[in-house]
Length: 508
Image (cartoon, helix red, strand yellow):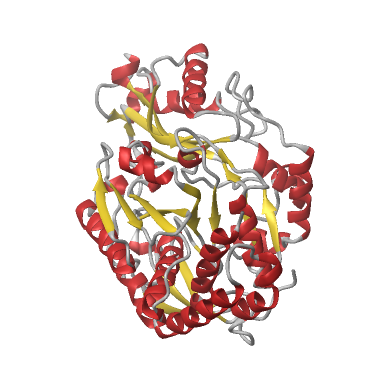
Protein backbone atom coordinates (compact mmCIF):
# COMPACT_ATOMS: atom_id res chain seq x y z
CA UNK A 1 0.00 0.00 0.00
CA UNK A 2 2.83 2.42 -0.77
CA UNK A 3 1.70 5.86 -1.85
CA UNK A 4 1.67 6.72 -5.57
CA UNK A 5 2.90 10.19 -6.52
CA UNK A 6 -0.12 12.40 -7.22
CA UNK A 7 2.05 14.97 -8.95
CA UNK A 8 3.52 12.58 -11.53
CA UNK A 9 0.54 10.24 -11.87
CA UNK A 10 -2.56 12.39 -12.00
CA UNK A 11 -4.63 9.48 -13.23
CA UNK A 12 -3.63 7.29 -10.26
CA UNK A 13 -7.16 6.37 -9.29
CA UNK A 14 -8.15 5.35 -12.81
CA UNK A 15 -4.98 3.45 -13.57
CA UNK A 16 -5.12 1.55 -10.29
CA UNK A 17 -8.78 0.74 -10.88
CA UNK A 18 -7.98 -0.59 -14.34
CA UNK A 19 -5.23 -2.80 -12.95
CA UNK A 20 -7.13 -4.44 -10.13
CA UNK A 21 -10.83 -4.04 -10.56
CA UNK A 22 -11.66 -7.45 -11.96
CA UNK A 23 -10.74 -9.23 -8.74
CA UNK A 24 -11.83 -6.54 -6.30
CA UNK A 25 -15.14 -5.30 -7.67
CA UNK A 26 -17.72 -8.03 -8.01
CA UNK A 27 -21.13 -6.87 -9.16
CA UNK A 28 -19.95 -3.92 -11.24
CA UNK A 29 -18.82 -4.31 -14.84
CA UNK A 30 -15.11 -3.52 -14.89
CA UNK A 31 -14.98 -2.08 -18.39
CA UNK A 32 -17.98 0.15 -17.82
CA UNK A 33 -16.59 1.40 -14.52
CA UNK A 34 -13.16 2.22 -15.97
CA UNK A 35 -14.78 4.06 -18.87
CA UNK A 36 -17.07 5.99 -16.57
CA UNK A 37 -14.19 7.03 -14.31
CA UNK A 38 -12.18 8.26 -17.29
CA UNK A 39 -15.08 10.44 -18.43
CA UNK A 40 -15.77 11.64 -14.88
CA UNK A 41 -12.11 12.55 -14.46
CA UNK A 42 -12.15 14.69 -17.59
CA UNK A 43 -15.27 16.44 -16.31
CA UNK A 44 -13.70 16.95 -12.87
CA UNK A 45 -10.61 18.53 -14.41
CA UNK A 46 -12.74 20.81 -16.58
CA UNK A 47 -14.92 21.73 -13.59
CA UNK A 48 -12.07 22.34 -11.14
CA UNK A 49 -12.24 26.15 -11.27
CA UNK A 50 -16.00 26.05 -10.82
CA UNK A 51 -15.59 23.69 -7.84
CA UNK A 52 -13.10 26.09 -6.21
CA UNK A 53 -15.44 29.03 -6.79
CA UNK A 54 -18.30 27.01 -5.29
CA UNK A 55 -16.33 26.37 -2.09
CA UNK A 56 -15.29 30.03 -1.89
CA UNK A 57 -18.85 31.25 -2.27
CA UNK A 58 -19.97 28.85 0.46
CA UNK A 59 -17.29 30.11 2.86
CA UNK A 60 -18.45 33.67 2.21
CA UNK A 61 -21.93 32.70 3.39
CA UNK A 62 -21.42 31.52 7.01
CA UNK A 63 -24.12 30.18 9.29
CA UNK A 64 -23.04 30.44 12.92
CA UNK A 65 -25.50 28.53 15.09
CA UNK A 66 -23.93 29.74 18.34
CA UNK A 67 -24.77 33.31 17.35
CA UNK A 68 -28.03 32.46 15.53
CA UNK A 69 -26.43 34.18 12.56
CA UNK A 70 -27.51 33.82 8.90
CA UNK A 71 -29.72 30.80 9.46
CA UNK A 72 -32.09 31.45 6.56
CA UNK A 73 -29.19 32.26 4.25
CA UNK A 74 -27.44 29.02 5.24
CA UNK A 75 -30.52 26.90 4.55
CA UNK A 76 -30.99 28.57 1.17
CA UNK A 77 -27.34 28.11 0.21
CA UNK A 78 -27.28 24.44 1.22
CA UNK A 79 -30.51 23.79 -0.65
CA UNK A 80 -29.18 25.48 -3.78
CA UNK A 81 -25.92 23.50 -3.63
CA UNK A 82 -27.88 20.25 -3.46
CA UNK A 83 -30.15 21.14 -6.38
CA UNK A 84 -27.24 22.27 -8.53
CA UNK A 85 -25.44 18.96 -7.84
CA UNK A 86 -28.38 17.01 -9.22
CA UNK A 87 -30.53 16.10 -6.21
CA UNK A 88 -34.10 15.86 -7.45
CA UNK A 89 -35.82 16.50 -4.11
CA UNK A 90 -34.59 19.05 -1.59
CA UNK A 91 -36.51 20.15 1.46
CA UNK A 92 -36.03 21.92 4.76
CA UNK A 93 -36.62 19.74 7.84
CA UNK A 94 -37.69 21.51 11.06
CA UNK A 95 -35.72 20.39 14.14
CA UNK A 96 -36.85 22.71 16.91
CA UNK A 97 -33.63 24.63 16.36
CA UNK A 98 -31.68 25.42 13.22
CA UNK A 99 -33.33 23.48 10.35
CA UNK A 100 -31.73 20.59 8.53
CA UNK A 101 -31.74 20.15 4.76
CA UNK A 102 -32.64 16.74 3.32
CA UNK A 103 -32.07 15.85 -0.32
CA UNK A 104 -32.34 12.70 -2.41
CA UNK A 105 -30.76 11.68 -5.68
CA UNK A 106 -32.66 8.60 -6.84
CA UNK A 107 -31.24 7.05 -10.01
CA UNK A 108 -33.04 3.73 -9.62
CA UNK A 109 -29.90 1.96 -8.39
CA UNK A 110 -30.18 -1.13 -6.15
CA UNK A 111 -28.36 0.58 -3.26
CA UNK A 112 -28.59 3.82 -1.31
CA UNK A 113 -25.64 5.71 0.20
CA UNK A 114 -26.04 8.24 3.02
CA UNK A 115 -24.03 11.46 3.12
CA UNK A 116 -23.84 13.79 6.13
CA UNK A 117 -23.00 17.47 5.71
CA UNK A 118 -22.78 20.31 8.21
CA UNK A 119 -23.43 23.79 6.88
CA UNK A 120 -22.70 25.76 10.05
CA UNK A 121 -19.26 26.98 11.13
CA UNK A 122 -17.50 28.07 14.31
CA UNK A 123 -17.26 31.66 15.45
CA UNK A 124 -14.15 33.69 14.60
CA UNK A 125 -12.25 36.83 15.57
CA UNK A 126 -10.97 38.59 12.42
CA UNK A 127 -8.17 40.23 14.44
CA UNK A 128 -6.56 36.80 14.90
CA UNK A 129 -6.41 36.00 11.17
CA UNK A 130 -3.71 36.89 8.63
CA UNK A 131 -6.43 37.27 5.95
CA UNK A 132 -10.12 38.18 6.29
CA UNK A 133 -11.82 34.96 7.47
CA UNK A 134 -14.78 35.28 5.10
CA UNK A 135 -12.86 36.31 2.01
CA UNK A 136 -12.03 32.69 1.09
CA UNK A 137 -8.76 33.89 -0.38
CA UNK A 138 -6.51 31.50 -2.30
CA UNK A 139 -3.16 31.64 -0.53
CA UNK A 140 0.25 30.19 -1.39
CA UNK A 141 1.13 28.60 1.94
CA UNK A 142 4.85 27.84 2.38
CA UNK A 143 5.56 24.13 2.55
CA UNK A 144 1.94 23.28 1.73
CA UNK A 145 0.82 24.69 -1.62
CA UNK A 146 -2.25 26.58 -2.79
CA UNK A 147 -4.99 26.64 -0.17
CA UNK A 148 -8.38 28.22 0.33
CA UNK A 149 -8.18 30.09 3.64
CA UNK A 150 -11.33 30.96 5.53
CA UNK A 151 -13.68 29.90 8.31
CA UNK A 152 -15.15 26.53 7.43
CA UNK A 153 -12.55 25.79 4.73
CA UNK A 154 -11.49 22.40 6.08
CA UNK A 155 -14.30 21.94 8.60
CA UNK A 156 -16.17 21.03 6.41
CA UNK A 157 -16.93 23.08 3.33
CA UNK A 158 -13.78 22.15 1.41
CA UNK A 159 -14.21 18.37 1.68
CA UNK A 160 -17.96 18.67 1.17
CA UNK A 161 -17.30 20.83 -1.87
CA UNK A 162 -15.05 18.09 -3.26
CA UNK A 163 -17.91 15.61 -2.87
CA UNK A 164 -20.31 17.97 -4.61
CA UNK A 165 -17.70 18.34 -7.37
CA UNK A 166 -17.89 14.57 -7.91
CA UNK A 167 -21.65 14.78 -8.44
CA UNK A 168 -21.19 17.68 -10.85
CA UNK A 169 -18.62 15.59 -12.74
CA UNK A 170 -21.10 12.71 -13.01
CA UNK A 171 -23.69 15.08 -14.40
CA UNK A 172 -21.36 16.89 -16.81
CA UNK A 173 -19.94 13.62 -18.15
CA UNK A 174 -23.40 12.21 -18.73
CA UNK A 175 -22.75 9.34 -16.33
CA UNK A 176 -25.24 8.13 -13.74
CA UNK A 177 -24.07 7.60 -10.15
CA UNK A 178 -23.93 3.87 -9.33
CA UNK A 179 -25.91 4.35 -6.10
CA UNK A 180 -28.81 6.47 -4.97
CA UNK A 181 -27.77 9.18 -2.51
CA UNK A 182 -29.54 10.53 0.58
CA UNK A 183 -28.00 13.77 1.87
CA UNK A 184 -28.79 15.14 5.32
CA UNK A 185 -27.20 18.50 6.13
CA UNK A 186 -27.16 19.88 9.67
CA UNK A 187 -26.96 23.50 10.78
CA UNK A 188 -26.03 22.95 14.46
CA UNK A 189 -23.00 20.65 14.40
CA UNK A 190 -20.76 23.32 15.90
CA UNK A 191 -22.98 23.59 18.97
CA UNK A 192 -22.96 19.81 19.51
CA UNK A 193 -26.08 18.96 17.50
CA UNK A 194 -28.76 19.58 20.15
CA UNK A 195 -31.65 18.96 17.73
CA UNK A 196 -30.23 16.81 14.94
CA UNK A 197 -31.93 13.61 16.07
CA UNK A 198 -35.25 15.36 15.48
CA UNK A 199 -34.34 15.65 11.79
CA UNK A 200 -33.58 11.92 11.59
CA UNK A 201 -36.93 11.14 13.22
CA UNK A 202 -38.78 12.90 10.41
CA UNK A 203 -40.75 10.04 8.78
CA UNK A 204 -39.43 10.64 5.26
CA UNK A 205 -35.85 11.01 6.47
CA UNK A 206 -36.05 7.86 8.59
CA UNK A 207 -37.58 5.78 5.81
CA UNK A 208 -35.00 6.87 3.25
CA UNK A 209 -31.95 6.65 5.52
CA UNK A 210 -32.93 3.11 6.57
CA UNK A 211 -32.35 2.05 2.96
CA UNK A 212 -28.72 3.19 3.06
CA UNK A 213 -25.77 0.81 3.35
CA UNK A 214 -24.02 3.40 5.51
CA UNK A 215 -23.25 7.08 5.99
CA UNK A 216 -20.07 9.08 5.52
CA UNK A 217 -19.05 12.63 6.32
CA UNK A 218 -16.59 13.96 3.71
CA UNK A 219 -13.28 14.92 5.28
CA UNK A 220 -9.71 15.88 4.43
CA UNK A 221 -8.35 12.56 5.58
CA UNK A 222 -4.64 12.58 4.76
CA UNK A 223 -1.87 13.38 7.23
CA UNK A 224 1.26 15.36 6.39
CA UNK A 225 3.05 12.21 5.16
CA UNK A 226 0.21 11.34 2.77
CA UNK A 227 -1.09 8.42 4.80
CA UNK A 228 -4.78 8.11 5.60
CA UNK A 229 -6.86 6.74 8.44
CA UNK A 230 -10.19 4.97 8.28
CA UNK A 231 -12.10 5.81 11.42
CA UNK A 232 -14.18 3.12 13.07
CA UNK A 233 -15.79 5.53 15.50
CA UNK A 234 -15.62 8.82 17.33
CA UNK A 235 -16.02 10.05 20.87
CA UNK A 236 -19.27 11.65 21.89
CA UNK A 237 -19.38 15.28 22.99
CA UNK A 238 -21.44 17.18 25.55
CA UNK A 239 -21.21 20.96 25.78
CA UNK A 240 -22.40 22.88 28.80
CA UNK A 241 -22.09 26.03 30.83
CA UNK A 242 -21.29 25.64 34.52
CA UNK A 243 -22.42 28.78 36.33
CA UNK A 244 -21.89 30.17 39.82
CA UNK A 245 -24.05 33.18 40.64
CA UNK A 246 -25.18 35.03 43.72
CA UNK A 247 -28.79 34.49 42.61
CA UNK A 248 -28.52 30.68 42.77
CA UNK A 249 -26.11 30.56 45.71
CA UNK A 250 -27.88 33.05 47.95
CA UNK A 251 -24.49 34.51 48.85
CA UNK A 252 -22.27 37.13 47.24
CA UNK A 253 -23.36 40.43 45.64
CA UNK A 254 -26.55 40.83 43.62
CA UNK A 255 -24.48 42.87 41.12
CA UNK A 256 -20.81 43.59 40.59
CA UNK A 257 -19.40 45.61 43.49
CA UNK A 258 -16.05 47.14 44.49
CA UNK A 259 -13.39 44.48 45.06
CA UNK A 260 -12.53 45.85 48.50
CA UNK A 261 -15.77 44.26 49.71
CA UNK A 262 -14.30 40.78 49.16
CA UNK A 263 -13.02 41.07 52.73
CA UNK A 264 -16.59 40.48 53.91
CA UNK A 265 -18.65 39.36 50.85
CA UNK A 266 -18.53 35.91 49.24
CA UNK A 267 -17.24 35.50 45.67
CA UNK A 268 -19.23 33.47 43.10
CA UNK A 269 -16.11 33.45 40.90
CA UNK A 270 -13.99 31.69 43.52
CA UNK A 271 -16.88 29.32 44.18
CA UNK A 272 -16.88 28.36 40.52
CA UNK A 273 -13.13 27.70 40.63
CA UNK A 274 -13.55 25.51 43.71
CA UNK A 275 -16.41 23.56 42.08
CA UNK A 276 -14.45 23.01 38.88
CA UNK A 277 -11.44 21.79 40.86
CA UNK A 278 -13.47 18.86 42.21
CA UNK A 279 -14.16 17.56 38.67
CA UNK A 280 -10.54 16.60 37.97
CA UNK A 281 -8.05 14.54 39.96
CA UNK A 282 -4.71 15.76 41.34
CA UNK A 283 -2.95 14.91 38.06
CA UNK A 284 -4.91 17.70 36.35
CA UNK A 285 -6.53 15.63 33.61
CA UNK A 286 -8.26 12.48 34.95
CA UNK A 287 -11.99 13.02 35.61
CA UNK A 288 -12.84 12.66 39.31
CA UNK A 289 -16.63 12.56 38.96
CA UNK A 290 -17.97 9.57 40.89
CA UNK A 291 -19.04 6.76 38.57
CA UNK A 292 -17.79 8.56 35.47
CA UNK A 293 -15.82 5.51 34.28
CA UNK A 294 -18.45 2.91 35.21
CA UNK A 295 -19.77 2.53 31.67
CA UNK A 296 -16.43 2.84 29.89
CA UNK A 297 -15.77 -0.23 27.72
CA UNK A 298 -12.03 -1.04 27.71
CA UNK A 299 -10.20 -1.32 24.42
CA UNK A 300 -9.99 -4.86 23.11
CA UNK A 301 -6.72 -6.56 22.24
CA UNK A 302 -7.58 -6.09 18.56
CA UNK A 303 -8.20 -2.39 19.04
CA UNK A 304 -4.87 -1.97 20.83
CA UNK A 305 -3.18 -3.82 17.97
CA UNK A 306 -4.78 -1.42 15.47
CA UNK A 307 -3.52 1.54 17.50
CA UNK A 308 -0.01 0.05 17.52
CA UNK A 309 -0.18 -0.30 13.75
CA UNK A 310 -1.41 3.28 13.39
CA UNK A 311 1.49 4.47 15.57
CA UNK A 312 3.96 2.78 13.23
CA UNK A 313 2.36 4.37 10.15
CA UNK A 314 2.20 7.89 11.56
CA UNK A 315 4.75 10.47 12.60
CA UNK A 316 4.92 11.65 16.22
CA UNK A 317 7.06 14.67 15.38
CA UNK A 318 4.55 15.88 12.78
CA UNK A 319 1.72 15.50 15.29
CA UNK A 320 3.55 17.45 17.98
CA UNK A 321 4.44 20.19 15.53
CA UNK A 322 0.86 20.50 14.32
CA UNK A 323 -0.43 20.70 17.90
CA UNK A 324 2.35 22.94 19.17
CA UNK A 325 3.19 20.60 22.06
CA UNK A 326 6.50 19.20 23.26
CA UNK A 327 5.38 16.38 25.54
CA UNK A 328 2.40 14.11 26.05
CA UNK A 329 0.82 13.68 29.47
CA UNK A 330 3.18 11.88 31.86
CA UNK A 331 5.82 11.94 29.09
CA UNK A 332 4.12 8.88 27.59
CA UNK A 333 5.22 7.23 24.36
CA UNK A 334 3.61 7.94 20.99
CA UNK A 335 1.69 4.67 21.07
CA UNK A 336 0.53 5.18 24.65
CA UNK A 337 -0.63 8.70 23.82
CA UNK A 338 -2.76 7.27 20.99
CA UNK A 339 -4.23 4.67 23.34
CA UNK A 340 -5.11 7.40 25.81
CA UNK A 341 -6.59 9.52 23.02
CA UNK A 342 -8.92 6.68 22.04
CA UNK A 343 -9.91 5.27 25.41
CA UNK A 344 -10.07 8.09 27.95
CA UNK A 345 -13.17 10.22 28.45
CA UNK A 346 -12.42 13.82 29.35
CA UNK A 347 -13.83 16.88 31.09
CA UNK A 348 -12.28 19.99 29.57
CA UNK A 349 -12.58 23.70 30.30
CA UNK A 350 -12.97 25.57 27.02
CA UNK A 351 -13.07 28.99 28.64
CA UNK A 352 -13.77 30.94 31.80
CA UNK A 353 -15.83 34.13 31.82
CA UNK A 354 -16.51 36.33 34.79
CA UNK A 355 -16.24 39.95 35.80
CA UNK A 356 -13.88 42.28 33.97
CA UNK A 357 -11.47 40.96 31.33
CA UNK A 358 -10.47 44.13 29.47
CA UNK A 359 -7.24 46.16 29.61
CA UNK A 360 -5.91 46.94 33.07
CA UNK A 361 -7.85 46.23 36.23
CA UNK A 362 -11.34 47.24 37.28
CA UNK A 363 -11.31 46.31 41.00
CA UNK A 364 -14.68 44.56 41.08
CA UNK A 365 -16.15 41.54 42.85
CA UNK A 366 -18.22 39.77 40.13
CA UNK A 367 -21.71 38.55 40.96
CA UNK A 368 -21.52 35.73 38.39
CA UNK A 369 -18.93 33.51 36.72
CA UNK A 370 -19.28 30.95 33.94
CA UNK A 371 -17.15 28.10 32.63
CA UNK A 372 -17.61 26.69 29.14
CA UNK A 373 -17.09 22.96 29.70
CA UNK A 374 -17.15 19.93 27.43
CA UNK A 375 -17.13 16.21 28.06
CA UNK A 376 -15.80 13.69 25.52
CA UNK A 377 -17.38 10.27 25.88
CA UNK A 378 -16.32 6.77 24.85
CA UNK A 379 -18.41 3.59 24.45
CA UNK A 380 -20.64 2.77 26.27
CA UNK A 381 -21.12 6.12 27.97
CA UNK A 382 -24.20 8.20 27.22
CA UNK A 383 -24.88 11.91 27.33
CA UNK A 384 -27.72 11.76 29.86
CA UNK A 385 -25.97 9.39 32.28
CA UNK A 386 -22.74 11.42 32.20
CA UNK A 387 -24.52 14.72 32.79
CA UNK A 388 -26.50 13.22 35.68
CA UNK A 389 -23.31 11.97 37.32
CA UNK A 390 -21.63 15.35 36.99
CA UNK A 391 -24.58 17.12 38.59
CA UNK A 392 -24.72 14.54 41.40
CA UNK A 393 -21.00 14.97 41.99
CA UNK A 394 -21.28 18.74 42.38
CA UNK A 395 -24.17 18.36 44.81
CA UNK A 396 -22.31 15.74 46.84
CA UNK A 397 -19.26 17.97 47.13
CA UNK A 398 -21.23 20.92 48.46
CA UNK A 399 -22.09 22.77 45.25
CA UNK A 400 -25.80 22.07 44.68
CA UNK A 401 -26.34 25.71 43.69
CA UNK A 402 -23.83 25.63 40.85
CA UNK A 403 -25.85 25.44 37.64
CA UNK A 404 -25.12 22.94 34.85
CA UNK A 405 -26.77 24.13 31.66
CA UNK A 406 -26.32 21.62 28.82
CA UNK A 407 -26.34 23.31 25.42
CA UNK A 408 -25.85 20.27 23.18
CA UNK A 409 -24.33 16.84 22.89
CA UNK A 410 -24.52 13.20 21.88
CA UNK A 411 -22.92 9.87 22.67
CA UNK A 412 -20.01 8.06 21.00
CA UNK A 413 -20.34 6.01 17.84
CA UNK A 414 -18.67 2.81 16.66
CA UNK A 415 -18.73 0.92 13.34
CA UNK A 416 -17.51 -2.68 12.92
CA UNK A 417 -14.20 -3.28 11.24
CA UNK A 418 -15.82 -5.75 8.84
CA UNK A 419 -18.66 -3.43 7.73
CA UNK A 420 -19.10 -3.14 3.97
CA UNK A 421 -18.63 0.63 4.26
CA UNK A 422 -15.25 0.11 5.93
CA UNK A 423 -14.18 -2.38 3.26
CA UNK A 424 -15.21 0.04 0.53
CA UNK A 425 -12.96 2.75 1.97
CA UNK A 426 -10.07 0.30 2.23
CA UNK A 427 -10.48 -0.73 -1.40
CA UNK A 428 -10.50 2.85 -2.69
CA UNK A 429 -7.41 3.86 -0.71
CA UNK A 430 -5.55 0.70 -1.70
CA UNK A 431 -6.27 1.26 -5.41
CA UNK A 432 -5.02 4.84 -5.06
CA UNK A 433 -1.78 3.52 -3.58
CA UNK A 434 -2.32 5.25 -0.26
CA UNK A 435 -0.97 3.75 2.95
CA UNK A 436 -3.86 3.57 5.39
CA UNK A 437 -4.51 2.45 8.94
CA UNK A 438 -7.69 1.75 10.86
CA UNK A 439 -8.35 4.36 13.53
CA UNK A 440 -10.17 2.81 16.47
CA UNK A 441 -11.81 6.06 17.51
CA UNK A 442 -11.46 9.74 16.69
CA UNK A 443 -10.90 11.92 19.73
CA UNK A 444 -12.78 14.67 17.93
CA UNK A 445 -16.51 14.25 17.68
CA UNK A 446 -19.30 14.28 15.14
CA UNK A 447 -22.92 13.15 15.62
CA UNK A 448 -22.38 9.76 14.00
CA UNK A 449 -24.29 8.10 16.83
CA UNK A 450 -27.45 9.49 15.23
CA UNK A 451 -26.73 7.05 12.40
CA UNK A 452 -25.14 4.14 14.29
CA UNK A 453 -27.73 4.25 17.08
CA UNK A 454 -31.50 4.02 17.08
CA UNK A 455 -33.52 4.17 14.92
CA UNK A 456 -31.15 3.61 11.97
CA UNK A 457 -28.27 1.43 13.26
CA UNK A 458 -26.11 1.99 10.18
CA UNK A 459 -22.35 1.90 9.69
CA UNK A 460 -20.99 5.46 9.68
CA UNK A 461 -17.57 6.95 9.13
CA UNK A 462 -15.42 9.69 7.67
CA UNK A 463 -13.80 9.54 4.26
CA UNK A 464 -11.78 11.72 1.95
CA UNK A 465 -8.36 12.60 0.60
CA UNK A 466 -6.45 15.86 0.85
CA UNK A 467 -5.58 17.83 3.91
CA UNK A 468 -5.99 21.12 5.72
CA UNK A 469 -5.63 22.65 9.17
CA UNK A 470 -6.93 25.25 11.57
CA UNK A 471 -10.40 23.92 12.27
CA UNK A 472 -11.95 26.12 14.99
CA UNK A 473 -8.80 28.27 14.89
CA UNK A 474 -7.40 31.29 13.01
CA UNK A 475 -6.13 30.87 9.44
CA UNK A 476 -8.14 27.72 8.77
CA UNK A 477 -7.30 26.35 5.35
CA UNK A 478 -8.07 23.57 2.86
CA UNK A 479 -5.47 22.40 0.33
CA UNK A 480 -6.52 22.52 -3.32
CA UNK A 481 -3.07 22.15 -4.91
CA UNK A 482 -0.35 20.47 -2.87
CA UNK A 483 3.40 20.82 -3.36
CA UNK A 484 3.72 17.52 -1.50
CA UNK A 485 3.29 14.83 -4.17
CA UNK A 486 1.79 12.49 -1.58
CA UNK A 487 -1.15 14.80 -0.81
CA UNK A 488 -4.19 14.80 -3.10
CA UNK A 489 -5.28 18.00 -4.75
CA UNK A 490 -8.89 18.92 -5.42
CA UNK A 491 -9.31 16.79 -8.54
CA UNK A 492 -7.91 13.67 -6.87
CA UNK A 493 -10.15 14.30 -3.87
CA UNK A 494 -13.12 14.54 -6.23
CA UNK A 495 -12.22 11.28 -7.95
CA UNK A 496 -11.87 9.45 -4.64
CA UNK A 497 -15.52 10.20 -3.87
CA UNK A 498 -16.57 9.01 -7.32
CA UNK A 499 -14.61 5.80 -6.85
CA UNK A 500 -16.11 5.29 -3.39
CA UNK A 501 -19.64 5.40 -4.81
CA UNK A 502 -18.70 2.71 -7.31
CA UNK A 503 -17.07 0.63 -4.59
CA UNK A 504 -20.14 0.87 -2.34
CA UNK A 505 -22.21 -0.38 -5.28
CA UNK A 506 -19.76 -3.25 -5.75
CA UNK A 507 -19.66 -4.45 -2.16
CA UNK A 508 -21.76 -7.57 -1.53
